[in-house]
Image (tube, rainbow, N blue to C red; front, side, top):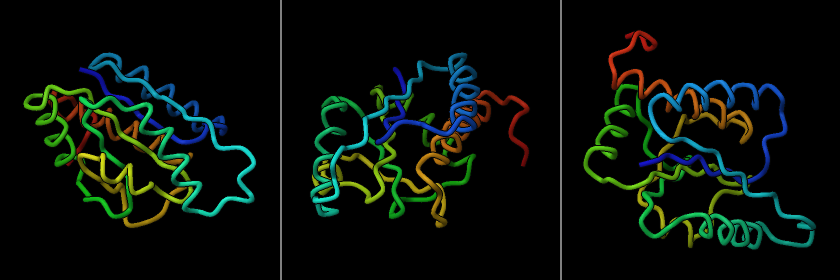
Length: 157
């Protein structure tokens, strides 16, 4: 079992990279965790938003296996408190037995093909964050979930 964070675009902010490095290193104590970055599309000025989403969607789906549990980080997804997310993740690990792929899409969201393939959607907040920032925030939340599952003193209620 492994967890992958699939992102559209490279992480180009040093502070985001540092945060990702911290939580990626911490997560290795709990589960196989990796970040896969899909390069941003080039020469898109002549493309519509739908065309961009479609092309990005093709690249996303190429990085997802039919057996993966695909979870989209999406503004229309369900919000969870950290303890609820930990329970959800624990249930996926215990009962699904599938690798989990969380996806942070591009600036315009996901194509209809990606939505159709998704097993679920979740939202980090009703607020909008930069796609760079979400990477570090979500990696921290996955780490937090594992510390909650193990009863470790990282999360406080």
